[in-house]
Length: 266
Ligand code: NAP
Image (cartoon, rainbow, N blue to C red; front, side, top):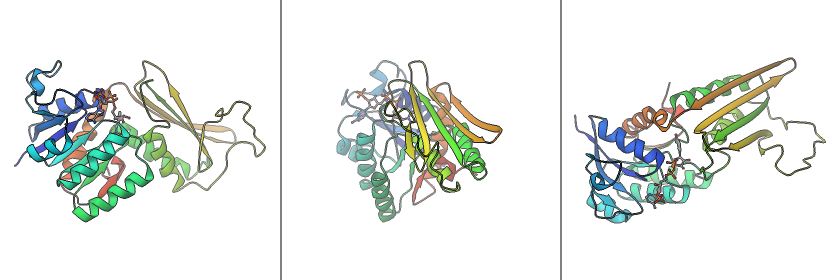
């Protein structure tokens, strides 16, 4: 079996570092190169934290994608950079597997069109943790019966986007089955703006940012006399890697854009 050749963008980031280790430690994956903001021309093994992991480092996208042979790009950077990388990867016939969050609807539509034109696989997953995918699916099941729902997402204080991609994705999945309802009292007034969180299809999303947290989400459903809470916690970045591995493998088998790991997990 041919190895799947992978480029990782953002290798020194918290997620990127785990992804590099995953690719390095997976027998049927091969690390072709990394795309970084510095250390151009060096070998990854010379950089602190990557001893024994060989791969050329590039800072220029075109140079990276034209020099390193690759099947898949794993992007774990920032929303604007991630979008640029994904578009460029498709140009070079490399399948993007994007964990970077904060992509807009417009970004997704653009990537869907480019993916269809190229007939290449592309996976955008706001959350790679299998437990988080189940939390979203269970929430969607519950939303058929509970139309009152508040999403509380909690992350580390270095996160750039709010609400989290997972919270948005959860709300989108719930919207598909939930009878529309504008929550709270119809005369409700915020005395401090933002007190009731973000409004998405009448549901409320609350974002907590604290040092020490990783990625956590609680979906709370209420009905007269009862409450249902569905919660998932990622305690470290390794929790996302089984999903990254699955996405890399799946990206090789499909020729469309898949948004959300729940679409490839039965
Ligand atoms: P992080 O620690 O800040 O890492 C981001 C990395 O991207 C940094 O090393 C940064 O390098 C690098 N970078 C920025 N611009 C770049 C460019 N032009 N080329 C190459 N690398 C570039 O963030 P993180 O916690 O790893 O998270 C990364 C992304 O993954 C975020 O969008 C986060 O929300 C998302 N995330 C997704 C999941 C999931 O399951 N899908 C889970 C957790 C996090 P510099 O430091 O030099 O700028």
